Length: 279
Length: 344
Image (cartoon, rainbow over all chains, first blue to last red; front, side, top):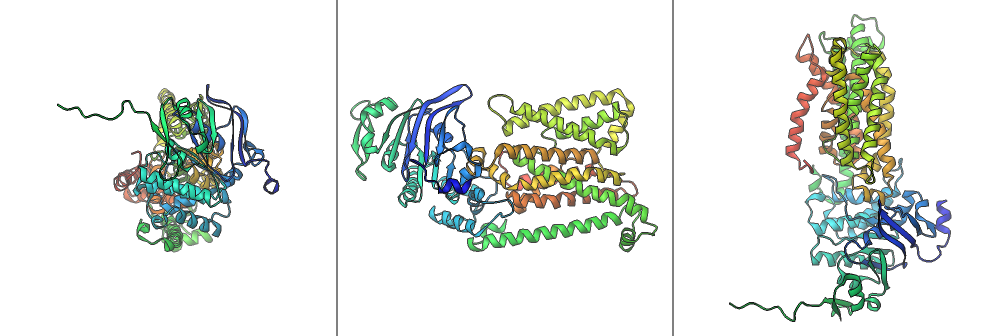
């Protein structure tokens, strides 16, 4: 079955969601939601808190089964694949991951090889190659023998990314990978995402809070509000004051990012300039 | 722990070599302890005579070595490995460093089974308990699992632990009620519940061995999935691990292991809790090493504790569970103080 799936040319994009209804218990998060993740894109999903962007990502990674509709991976409903087969095609870096106490960086990254391993062949040279490559790619090779719990937040996030890279999947989903990082480390993580996409190896999907960084890095931007896609496309084409107003209820002006020419959202000020009260 | 200072290219191989060597050393220690356990006790038997008693027979020590100390030693190995492996599995499944075979109500269920066997079926022989203990352990586990996963949120480590505590409290109450109604049952239960290998004969060993072997094999089969699960449920699913199946098989394995061990030796504390922690300081958190080490370290602690119990109070003896608790508690306190243990 596996080989059959791999030889068959996938119709359209590799990862699509069709007419999803997503809910946690009784609470409906999204309904009639359809999206396409363009192959080889760096797709970023933005929207206000609780708009359903992380929920959508969870369903794309088959962590949450839709109550209606389907997520289609390579032309077939994702729920019909064996779970390890999905994990060889689609990697996920969830928001909440736990590093076991006393685990080294190399060991944590090596756990990304799980879907490639069999019970009787726990480790292979392929695994060694993938782990080394992932460590080098994320600049964490020199941390390999350190304990994960003694790393800084930025280093730790790069190590988790390395684990996801070691999984060697053509599709990579990241759920808010820059949370808790300072601006320099946010840029570092997103630069890495851009490199991965530009090298043509991977399609990367990122849920991101930082609208301006999303507009800078995304090749494909999806703006969501209340479980619905409000706009999608190249940031330059879709990011307008009207869109931001309708998605975030925020008045703003849009200027060109002086570095990249991408849209930069400048929130409207309460008054023209801050005043210092003189006594 | 020296891994932190080694340079990357050499680490993987040298760590692996150290871990293989450690397993060999542990196996050697266990063999020596087993030999000592056959030879030493109220009456010391020279090793040469032990060997002859085991191989050809016809010595004065035949009865002591073959019928008394051999079953006892083998049961120590079985119970020790069962409790240590069960403890490691439960700590991984519940992601709770304090998890041990008592946590999910398994021991309380087994105890209630034994009490019911004594009180209502008039069974006084050890070999009659096993089925009752296993049934009791299974019912308690199913109840804990059902209670812990009821509702929309589904099973989570915290909910399972809470359900385990609640079921344990209820079962303990039931045990007290039954035991207090009859002095015969009270005496029988008291003798069983101290937790000891003393007086266990070959039929008991033969009876519990299959359950423990199946439980251990099942546990070893789960090691990679446990490694994935240790990263959190979402990450485990992202890696393609079957979380629900891993939890279910893990619970089946711990029920078999704890039910069988508890039926045979009574409740033995601290082995399931302390051994995985001791082992982890040497192997790190990789279950592919942790479980094999537990498989050897559990019996080492159990056989050593039983032997110490026999030697300290010669010609009488201390119950094994008393020795494991006396040895286990300080070791555990030391481990907590030495390592930064998350969640403690």
